[in-house]
Length: 461
Image (cartoon, rainbow, N blue to C red; front, side, top):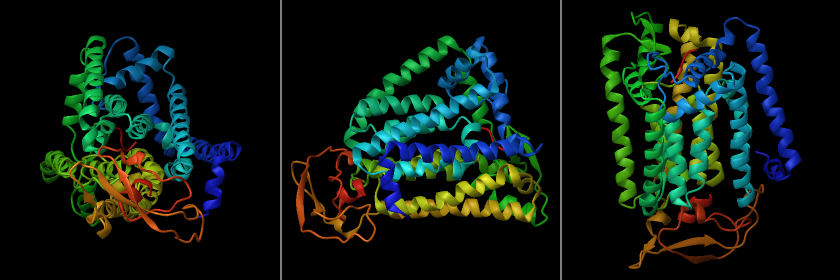
């Protein structure tokens, strides 16, 4: 990797130039897709959003539409665009604006840290994701997840921001579990107040918005693209009778066994989250940066979900950018398979999605690569959470403070071939210090202790 080019992103003109080039790529691909009668379906959701926006602008919640599976705050987003006219292009323009906002959030964080790697990951988002970045709603919750997790030094505000994201699409609220256990209470206060405001306001403005969200989401089956559906996809490819069914805006596996498996995935998700909560509460993850925990959490949610729409990769790329901005080096390694997952999803939909549904070997093979890369990323991320021997030696005194080690002065961590030099010295960190706050000045190298880690249409829902 050319670290020099990444460092040059500190120059505004340089990063604006690359932002325009990468977004131009997505625009060109989108234009080519619109010329093909099958490929242009990648933008069909914009028409759905337009229909919903028009109805919500008049106070009508699309609860009867099985494709409506969004939490309460989403009604205000769609309804707000509906008040402006609800044309499909308005939603695409909204998602471009959200991309700009994510870019600015990461640029502000990179400027503060003097480290532009996370920004560079998001800069590459259109190359990894393709036009779906602007054809789906998922960049909006990603914006709030990133903003909330980068604000953990102010836990009440972080909790509130993540709650707003959860009101848009649930998963950002779950990212609050990544916060330090010492910040949980304050984060919960911010989240609780925000949730109360959202629920009361939504119930007043759109009385059926909560029930419609809960009922349509609960009724979903096993989507063809989900991890759990992969054996069924291969069985179909090998000639078994595994019929598909188009329900809730996507293709699902229509067999009794799949219908039996689907309801168990939510408890499996919950078990993983409970393990995370227990590990956090017991202090087993005190050595791990918030960004690392957030990345593992989003991977677990995706792997155990009944649905694995291609736009979910927007979440994954956003959380990978967070890891490169504020995570550990070991977790950065775990993000590398995300590129494979995202690119194969872009190839599959819309180019080879029919092949996956019909059991064509090319599409199924690509789909298997996508799922395999996702599982590899999850496995590597769990390994990255495990403490190193140096972290096992961390001292915790009676006052609850921690003694960390940091390498002395060295050449920049972003330079190529930089040698590690300098003596190790102890740093006294008060209990409750945010992982994001424990960054050494730019120009020092990572240690092996906790401070090192702190630096260091296929689918609809």
